[in-house]
Length: 626
Image (cartoon, rainbow, N blue to C red; front, side, top):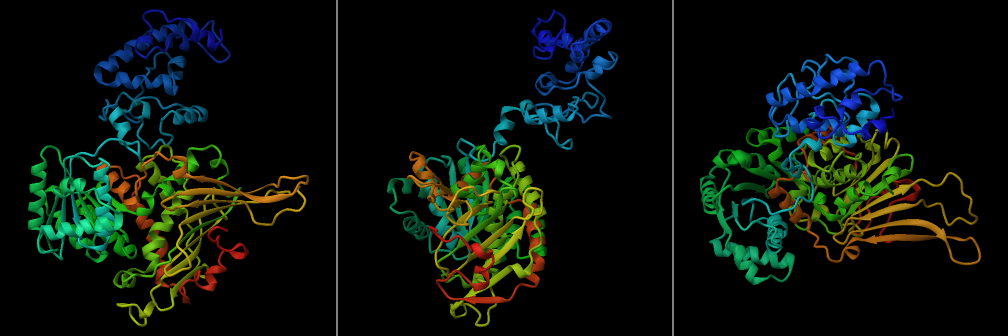
C-alpha cells in the first residue's frame, strides 16, 4: 500500500481522527517506508487504539490543548515513537521537551509537551509553516497563535485607529516641535488617523504669555511648514491642545494637567511622552517624568543622538529602564519613517528578482550618500555639542546600511527586524581611521556661536565593511555633510560585471547600478546596457525607472514624522531603534572618536575634501543625474 493510498482511505470510527482534526492516524501508524505492511500491522493498530485515550486524557487536564494538537497535522510532528513502541504515549515528558505554551499564552502542564519535528527537512518545512527554527524560541507556531497575537505582531502598516491618547510634548516651543511635530499631528488629524478621544499637552521652559499666544505660534508653524490650513479642521484640533510651563525640578503642574486630560477623555487612555528637548536635558526630564503616577503605563519617545559615547549611552539607557520597559521606549530615527526607506524592504523581500543577487557574489560596492546643501542655519549650539558624525553617521546612515545589508527576516515585525539588524551591527568591522575623512566647511568658525578654534566636523565620509558570509569584501561608502554642492539622499548598489564580454564595442567599464532615491518623491532606477536599435549590434546605456508616486497615484503617502507618530500610538516599535543597536554602534565608534582623523577643510558648494572624493577609488561617488 502506498502512502497516498493510505491517506485516501476513510478513517474508521473510534480512531484518533476526531481528536487530531481529521488526520487518519490509525492508517498512518500502520505504514512504513516503501509502503510496508504485514506482520507488524496488528501491533501498530493496537497502539493506535491507545492514542485517542491518551490524547483525550491530556485535553481534559489542559484546557486549550486541543487547539495545539491540530499543529501535529500541519507541522508533521513525529509519531515515530508510537510506531516504534506502542507503549510510548503521543506526548512526551517535560524533562526532554520544552513545556507547551498554549494558544491563550498560558503554560500547559509540564508533563505534556509537543514533540518537535525531527530531521533537517522536517525542521525546514516546519519553520516555513511558522514553527521556530531555533530551539530556544517559544514552541508556538504562528498557526497556534490567537488572532489578537497575530495582529499585534504584523509589524509596519497595522490598520485601525489608535486607542484614546494623551500626547505630552516636552520642548513644545522648540524648533523640532514647530517644524515637524505640530504639522505632522495636524495632518494626521485631518486624515482621521488620530483617535477622536485625543488630547495634546504641551510643555516647555520658555512659556508663552497665555494659551492663545501658544496656539497662534502653533498655527503659524503649521501654515509655514504644511501650507494653507483648513480652518474648520484647525478649530477642532486646537480644542484638544493645552499648554503647561515646567522645569526639571518641578513637574507638579504638568502631572496635574496630564491627569486632568486623562480623566476628561475617560476610559482606557494611553499616554505618550515626546521629548523634543536638547540631548543634555534628557536624563533629568526622564527622572522628573518617572515620578508621575501615569508613567507606569506610558510610552516615551526620544530623539537622537542617544548618548555621545558608549558610557553616556549606557547611562541614559539605565535611567530609561528605571521607569520604562524596553517595549515602551521609542528611539526615533525619522529616516526609517520615510516611504522610500521602507520600500527598501519591499524591494528586497517582496520580489524574487533582487534577493537572490543581493550578496557579495553579485554586488561589488554600496554607496549611501546624504549630502546637504544648507549650512548649520544658526544651530551652532547643537553642532558644537554633537558634530556630524554623532548627528548623522551613528544614526541615519548606519540605519540605512542595516536596511540594505540585513538578512531576510522570518516575518516583518519588530523582534524579527531588530534581530537581523543586530546581527549586521555585530558583524561590522571596526573602521580604519585611514579610510575615514572628517571635514569642516570654510567659514564655519565665523558662524555665530561657534568657537573660533572649533575642531567639530561638518562633513564625514568613510569606508565600512560587514564581515559576514553575505557581505564579506564588499565596501560600503558613507558620506554626509553641510554646505555641499547639492542635497540628495541616495543609495547606489553596484553590480559585478559579467565574467565574459562577448559583445563588440562595449560602452564603457561602468558597472550596472541600482539607484534608490530616498526623497519625498521616491524613485528607483537601474542603469543597464542594451542594444541600440539599428542594423548593427551596438551597445548603449539605458535606464529602467520606477517612480512610486506615479505608479500609485491614488495613494496617500505619510511624511516620516506622521508615520512614526502614528506607529507610536499604535504601539508598533518596528521602525524604531533598540537599546542593543545603540550600544553596539557606540562600541564600534568610540575608538574612532577618541582618536579622530585630522580635520580637512573644504569650500562651500563643493563635494567635500579631496581625500573624500578619492575614497571610492576610480569610480568615485555617483553624482546626481549621472
